[in-house]
Image (tube, rainbow, N blue to C red; front, side, top):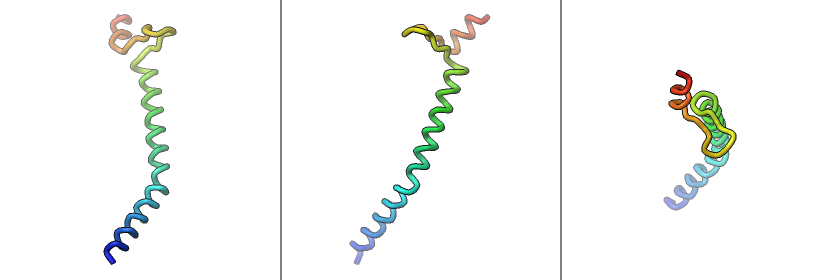
Length: 64
């Protein structure tokens, strides 16, 4: 009897993770792209070649 309860609860948890797991993944993906966008706009200046990018500290000191 206890074995059937464990199997039943495991099945419910598995189905719940399948149904709601994708929405959490989509939220995390959106959060990633928002942070990446903010990083590129406000904290890093991307250079045209490898090693030519500037961080926020370098951008600020060059502007003064």
